[in-house]
Length: 307
Image 1: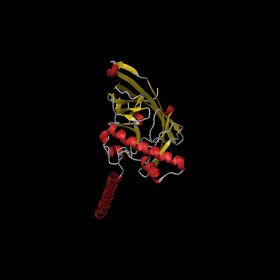
Image 2: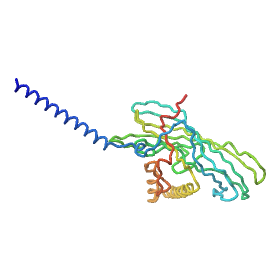
Image 3: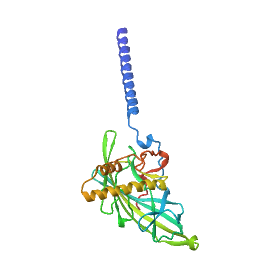
Image 4: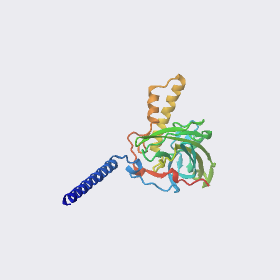
């Protein structure tokens, strides 16, 4: 009897040891997984996710140009202005292995100015940093195809003709996800009006109103699409850098159209311009790095649903 009792106690002790070892291994495995698992970009950078239904804006840079397209630096004074954004009409449809989202983005930009310019005909316009779509997990801005009605917007990579959906391959946690984005943009001006004053003291105003329809294609149930608005918007300095790059790109494209062959400079320009980068990297200034505090960020899925 005593021998049998000792054997039972010994067996129980072995079982407890085995259970303890198993629990330790499970805890160790969890700890290793927790330490080595990838951390989403938005979490790693401690980016605050805001309400998609908020009222958001960023500064625009207003400027004037003469009939030759040259910027006018004297005689025309603009009041500070900003682009005001509204996001709405989110709709989701499922097509096999994919979810197709659409939503609309309205942009309103008021313009007010005084003018003593006597150099002939001129026009006013603005430089604006558009909200961007990026990935929650990697922080990478998505490529997008873009069509613009009536040449109402110009810029690097913008085409007034039909454009295909831009595609981006997101690699996350040993998986690949194909994200497609297409933006269809149209805009119009209300028309110049006199707001106050007379003669050289007269204040004139106008308003640009644009609407963009976005179509986003993602793998079914993918939840990583985010919207980011650069708080600092556009400035005289950032516009000057962009304009320099834009003019250079047009020069390189003209050479390509004349020769039928892309120069090494054009190839390098396009590789840099259109490479996939995170929202903390600037395309215009290689030395500029943004931080989480430079952006307003919210989830695309939180945009007001279509009624």
